[in-house]
Image (cartoon, rainbow, N blue to C red):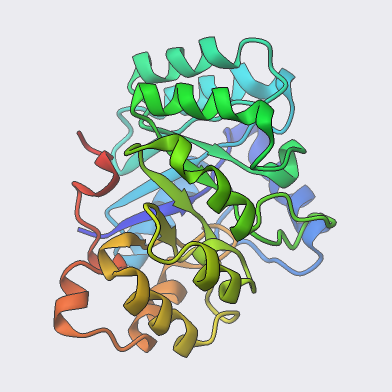
Length: 266
């Protein structure tokens, strides 16, 4: 089974506008599907992906409920595992986390650049503790976002400062810990209790760097993620082939992600 741990889609009524806005902001990205749930499922099937983890993000407090209503609506859709999102400035963030957990949502995503907070701010600690107490997975966008201005709000060193707050609750650092910041990943994150995903690394990450990070962190701590529709699952799978993993690494590699990892199907 191949699980793509990092994908995006939008409600049908919003997909075209959302993709158009993100294309404009990035100035360089061409989507690989139309941004709808159906488009994501078609692209996944064409790429040999069995399950897509859909990452939703509340970019402001007002969006939080609607974003999570959409995530909850995806529960039970074949081949889809939705994540929710909370905004640090939402007064009901704690209640929303409980609603997500009670509904069957398995995790939440934060995008500190979009949500305008630094990952190691003191005000975030109670939110992280609440997430951990609910047993939810936490995924962070890490490093540069090509569609957002600097500063970068989730760098490897900042994330490293708060990892212990989560205890044994799973944490995922997207984009191998930060697009084009992989030496910082090596310095601050390799060997820590977290997962890295491969999202949006094809054509950017030198294969030698990916191979080294996997060897140092362990293939069982690397999650295959494409960032679809902004990158193609097929492209990321080609990149993984360039990592030249050993047979042992392949058995626990991002190409064949085990369902027990990160408890997606528990």
